[in-house]
Image (cartoon, rainbow, N blue to C red; front, top):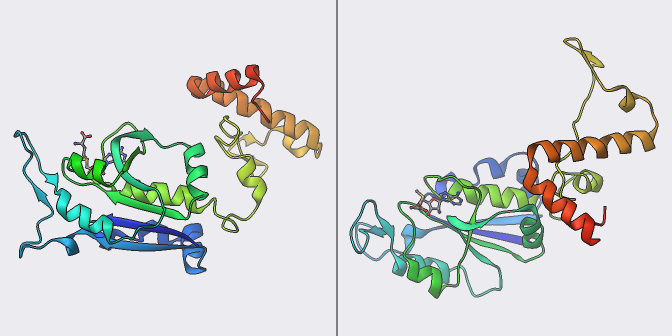
Length: 236
Ligand SMILES: C[S@@+](CC[C@H](N)C(=O)[O-])C[C@H]1O[C@@H](n2cnc3c(N)ncnc32)[C@H](O)[C@@H]1O
């Protein structure tokens, strides 16, 4: 079973949205498990202190390495990747998410305040992962984002395997537009080709739309897609 261990000073936030819908059903059915570790349980003083002032001065507080180190050690010595959610980390991608679902699970460390003492990152070999170029007030929502993205790819969690194959990023392209009934809504109609029943034409239209949207909205993805196409590593 794919196991997520989350280290946080706000354990009550979990499972939150991970307890609902697809991820929640998969959690209830045992497709994955979640264990939430309260970092404060590893403090030794009566005030249960998890942070201290930054060495060298400056604003805010820093999470203490001794407390965090003990909390990480308590998750065991298994081979799961240990990720620290951090705006400094490598940006999360669908490719990385897919790779992470191939492991036995994850140990996720949620930062708070100004972040985490650098020594615990080095000593416990934490890999820093970012969910985007903006700053959240804590790592908990980022951990949920990461877990949600992984869980939906676990075997048996998503209904149709085909929906995964055609999703945004799977092929390096954004997904084509979707429509459903009613056929006409507020004067807007479903593109004729989608009602034609001609599967070849529908596939070609969807592909053209996926390419158009990627070109218009994400020049970075489009350039990478063209590059792969030219070098022959494109499989689509
Ligand atoms: C207020 S932030 C610390 C920001 C830090 N002082 C900096 O400038 O990089 C507190 C915590 O939120 C989490 N966090 C904030 N933004 C994030 C992001 N974009 N991706 C992942 N985690 C993030 C991290 O765990 C971080 O330690």
